[in-house]
Length: 414
Image 1 (cartoon, rainbow, N blue to C red):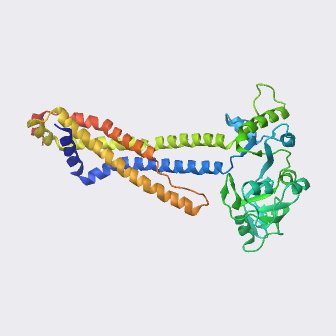
Image 2 (image 1 turned 30 degrees about the vertical axis):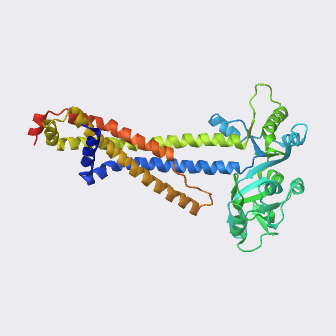
Image 3 (image 1 turned 60 degrees about the vertical axis):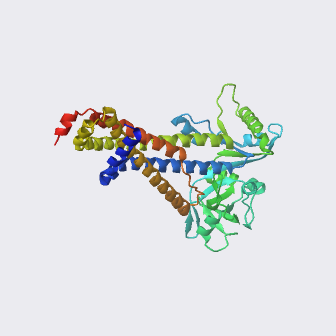
């Protein structure tokens, strides 16, 4: 029997009972839709995060305190690390150590809320050099002024706030000159950054910048930095400068040959590669977990096919009586199983695509994230092929059972 005729018979068998067919392929469709949704959101997350890393700038890299995380103990140690201190800042400021560095800006992070009168906000409180952030990320205050080295040396109680923070604390009033409270300390607002959104890893709208020296002395009681942001004179010199920085810090930390660095250097390229790999692995893992639903759907396909074989026993006997071979019967029922899973996969791809698009629109509408919709072509093709494989695997037993029926016994079946 020609395969086209077998396929035609299979199509008639599948469409003969639409209600049963729909319920049977529903399991496959749900599994594929879930895979598409997760893959799409995973790809969109990857695009968003990698875009933010690119926003750091090609001439920027970060030196973080603590050694590379290899286990739970290392993670805790990294969080509590005080390996980067003023001595490192002074060493990197000497051109003999790293001639291509233009600026090194220390950063410390303060947790807690900020209040003004009866109003309270929970922004990101960043101890750093506001003029550096303004220059590098084009976030210069449109109201008031910024602060820089002079205020840092004086450990001044000044702050530059983001547009959203200003709105939450002051409404339509001018914040410049007013005093806000951070950890029981009063800070005078000297500038307001216009709406900027997320740049790199900083959401300027929801941030407050204060001198890092003030944060260290009066808010945190520490003498170390969480990280150093390093700017080079030319992106072409970034790789050489990272080597210079590593050598300089190993020297100031008195590390011997073979000792592990107690700091981490993060370039945009390395971060993009590392985070991209992590997100890819996570997406594949979650898609694999969800794909279990396809196996469950395959079991449903097999059950339905067994019922169909039993119901059509006389049809099988009649076809064999007029010359159909075991191979013909096997092909017909195997094609039915494959058609069911193929249609289920196609429906799942369409449903998953719609869900992913709606989710992307919702995320973009109800958050400040620059979220974009991505259709995972590779995941869609993979899910569809996997659906067909499920049909083949779970359709073989019912099809083989149908092909082995004796024509005489099948014709006598009631």
